[in-house]
Image (cartoon, rainbow over all chains, first blue to last red; front, side, top):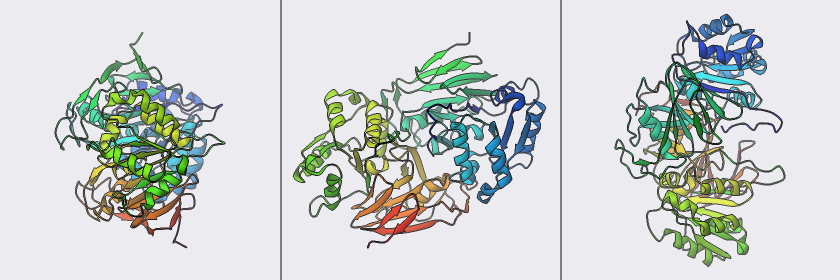
Length: 274
Length: 274
């Protein structure tokens, strides 16, 4: 599923991957800002809890978004591929101003919604201006190439991360989450080493990348975002390295960005918070 | 790298994945047809032998295409990422009518050319009407999601195939090659099970999928193409299955297509040879 085309006179919506475990009880900074860029008090939020195996995940976010002032919120709990035809959920999706995908297992989202009209609608709505975000598994699914699973550790090793197709709202990034907490620099570098065309975005917990319609990323939250830029990569040895052995990568550029910092995908420039 | 946009009044070029070991001495059917849809006697063929570690692979195809009547052919042997800036090769690429990627290791192509101006040019030229084909590794690299490596066997098993980003000339298919010879149905099914939005194309050796600009696939060659259509997939268990265990998939549709058969990606209809 590649990114849907944005109309010449239109603007793509915000894309907001969150690193998981975002604050839900105190300042709720990330969820508040998500709501703000989804229409604020006029927001109608579709919550998709498909990644989660727990029965109350969707309603928990519905309550949160209503408490924060959303005009409406509804949980669209797609649990089987046949659920993609649910007409009430399709109707809500078509009129929503924001879509939020919860955490769980990203392969639940891709296996249940991949290739269905729901996945196609989400791409189309994103291209038409609707905000789409997600936390943890819901963050991973947003890009064209997603990390499906992998191993921990800071050094990239052949076979350390496994990719699968995601929703394809953007093809500029490969996203990883729980980044510092689960020691995932190695698996993000491994994912980028296969084909160094994308930018790696490693999201700490309670930290979000607010990617605006002009392709500038704004960091929001308590942790950091590790941006891995391989535009100037000199060499990747991953085509010759045996499984489990370290991969040689030269000229990787890293930015560790905290709340208020930005990264521009056009110029590839990072700016510290003002 | 997602598919480049095709101009409203333009037409994408042919995309031609070959299953490897195509006949190079007798009828040379596949290479002849490749040349034909690349301009015939006016064809200028850029051969990219980056997948191969052997020094003479590129020149072998240059000789073959010249013997078959191409106006010109040149080997662009990108062997390091810094080679992407070679001005003579860039100039030939810009004026070629067909691009052929040889076999070898697809991760050599993606690690050496991924994210470089060469990869971007190939996408742009394909969208502008230039024929792009490749054999074995050169076939795998053509699509957005490529099988980087995997295990043999007919039954899909979790972790059996590893995906990486390819050149992204099309995002409709996931390609596998040496299909019958290396017993690869399982790894193709596994690749599709992650996110069942694409169509699987399993290419036997000496067999090619000629994907025309109207998204109709024409089978050419001595073997078969196994088309795996998961549009009506009922269930995929890959999100819950442990590594190495079989994956449950329901309602997979297969077509085994031989020389002269077609498959239409719009209608998802297969037609036997007339």
